[in-house]
Length: 452
Image (cartoon, rainbow, N blue to C red):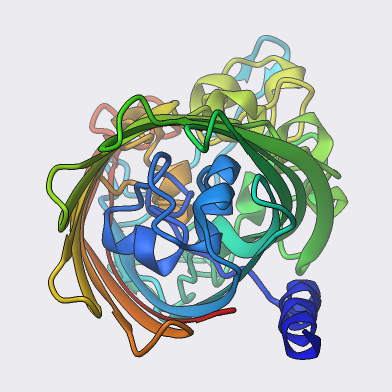
């Protein structure tokens, strides 16, 4: 008993120190949580798969999980970059335009350039634990990186001309963002009707970390240019909740659903001139429904549908240059209805399969298809946030040495997606500059579970 308590305490203590790491797959959310789920395209709202990390997908699944402690670590490699043309003016200097609606709206032409982001390797840890209080009641905790974004473009991008400029993506030197989201989710779940129905609830304690650099050139579009760029990292806390349910209409079919509330976080005061509502950057709500089918004793198929509601957060979903060029003060960066990144709500479809190849070995595969939230009219501002991924292909395995020890692995590949659009702030050039953003990704995860 002492050893069990020590393991649980280690997982909970680790929650205090674990750090979420920036990544982007379905928008800026992870494609899946937990090494087993990641091997099946991130699905599992109806399939706990005997993993305490099911908490991150559906807390109700905890009732189908053995007493255990799990540790995992992911190596994540996003390859992202951009290219842009200069347009007919070819003038790289910041040039104030004509007043619009009582506010001076500058143009923002840029030189022809191309660059790949540095910082291409990230480590993402995860911790989880579960414990059955009674035959029907279970508690657990999961600690995981929900999502994030990272870009780091050096000031010496491959440009044709940077006359009288500092260089960098937006004439502000090295440019990029770093967004990290760490979730801590203590959970309670209970089963009913001879384990056919389960309900679970998680409290969400969230730490966000953010930094932006090299975007000071947009000061003329901001309500607070001093708190727009190059102010270092800032950390804030937020709180929300998740509820879930599973139901087994037959022995071979399980249905599942979960809802995660919008997470209300403190404002980023250092970036009150960037994010709408003076630095507000809450985490949008999501909901997921799906099923798991044991088609044979050895084969299980899962299908999940997820909706990510980026429209919950103005800083994410409000249009960028449509608002910036409107001339309305409240639509400037940092305003009460300020310009954002123009991201749409997205639909995500996750198809997974698991084969019990031997009594000790499980093999997995999956396909995750998510909408690209960024349209061609929002490309320029999203050069530093190119969350354009669509297809994700996954594979994974687990091997149990005995009833106590398991090891796991998963791999994800997301082929390159690119989006091209015009620079809307080269007003009157007649031949608008074009920007293309692109990204592809690789992720490998290993994990260990101790059951007791």
